[in-house]
Image: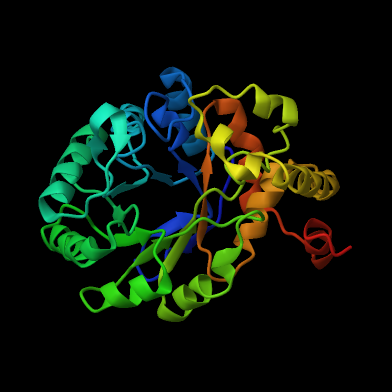
Length: 319
């Protein structure tokens, strides 16, 4: 039963009306590959997806690379039998290599094989948004983008976009076909895209959905030094500089400021962190990752959270 009404916004000029928060399916890809999050419980992942949809979330973002198909299998399982399915976004360009490591390929044949696998695992006839995951190798991005334009023309994907591209790379591929969407990292601990990329996307009418708005769990309020030490060895975050000194102390101080604002609104630091990204006029939606149903409710409030100037000053350490 739907208990929350989430407002929607148009994703760029695609015509897709999306909720301001979407379900990010990276972590539910599980373990056993070079960008895994440790073992996950698939039943809990399915329940988390269903709970988010019940609360009004209307899009899921995944990728073939997340667990090399496992995330898409879990999403497909969650979608099976639904009367009305959400929009499904996925990505290609990172097929599985030797020893479950990530290979970078934007070759036409490789992307087509990846999409065929994605459609099968997701159980859909067409993907609502298909994205190039990374602009690597750089010399193949024109071939990759031409392939996505072909896939759209054939009706296998409805809209096409890119993730992790620079302004120069966006300009390069715009000569081939319009770029409908962009998916960059954006959070209080990753603000580089504010300078050039987000203003460019806004000027060009490119829809923007940002990933890791909570800094891959760093800004949720649940991450402590002790918890970081206890992360499994196959969790990529254990190797990230953001989760180590000297950055860690700065980030935990930021979480304290987020908690101050969260207390004013009766919510969580993670919800405030997500709401902060949505203040940028270029941003249409934020991808929020859930692995259990109980994680969903606090973050969904981010879509309805109205931060004041005082709140923003507190968050950014100016008050």
